[in-house]
Image (tube, rainbow, N blue to C red):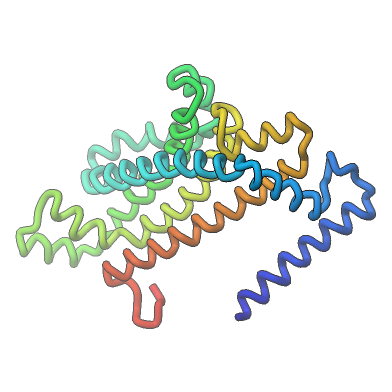
Length: 255
């Protein structure tokens, strides 16, 4: 209940500050629309169907790019984390590529993949892949040696060893990277759609700006934030479910 009160008070204060800024700042609504203008813009996008279409297009791109990044990042991370000799050769290349913003690759991505869904998916993949890969590799190195000795005593080897021993042991660390990667990928989804796509929430922002509809632009930004918050909560639930399955959650819900 306290959490609900905190949320209500926080957002009420934010809207109040926003309203006061509009009233006393004497802002033109084309530069800073009031909360009421934004609500009207939101309703217009809902009734026209453009908001739902944009959300569905963005979510589809995000799901494809993020899922591919999770699958490849975790799989390669488990393999390279276990075969440290190979990782020692690959790590310098990863460290070189990792700090490069996915947006910096955009000119090449557009040249290679054209305009449409693919550029945004590739940007999401790049944004999510490196944090997942690096954290998984590090997590594998922290696996308790007791588990490894027990597995070897029982003759568990190969893929079974990675999936039944290493992955469950490393998952708490990997789960943290999935959270971080999700937020980063969502941010870059919007950036990718603002340049390389003709639909989606990022494109909706650009389209609203070009039509001088600051109310729709701000509505789109708020929707993006809310969806990011919902996605983060959903992955938190999935993470908790998997941790529970692997035995990392206590009866009182603590990990």
